[in-house]
Amino acid sequence: MTAKPTRAEVLAAANRTVPDLIGPGLKVLFCGTNPGLYSAVIGHHFGRPGNRFWPAIFAGGFTDRLYSPYEDEAFLELGYGLTNIRERATAGMAELTTAELQAGCARLQAKVRRFQPKYLAVLSVGAYRVAFRQPKATLGLQPLEIGATRVWLLPSPSGLNAHYQPAALGKLFRELNAAVEAAD
Image 1: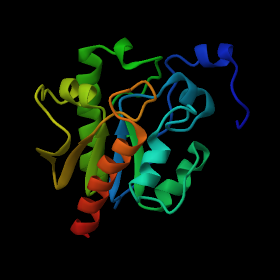
Image 2: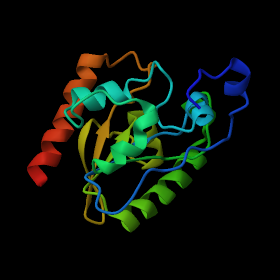
Image 3: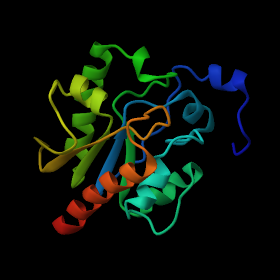
């Protein structure tokens, strides 16, 4: 689907899923909280036009150009994967319970152990704190490792996150990219 979904289509997407883009040997597995309704309709990660993930990835130096959500499979070919803590689409993180986030964390950790990316980048401070039971976690490299995978915490790129504007997101994503390149 490349046409803009209707409001009815977006509302009907509640509880749908967006497939993981994951495989062995990834440099970074980027992990959102859960798919938004718009992403669930179009079937691509970080699909809502106001989401700043793709611009932040570009600004962070992970790609040589701005990718579209419809090119998320090409992102996988660059050595980067996409997943979520919870699979079910919602209008916002507030619709997820603590139990759901913590159960999702267990599934996420199993994926990380299976595929062993160099880094897991969790894209939501609030979701990370709840899901990983780390209430005082701050941005950047976390003391937690999952097997040999390092965990990095970034702010949510959602357009609803007014705390971090595009330039600040780009800077934080560049910090992760520098760590990934230094590890190679």
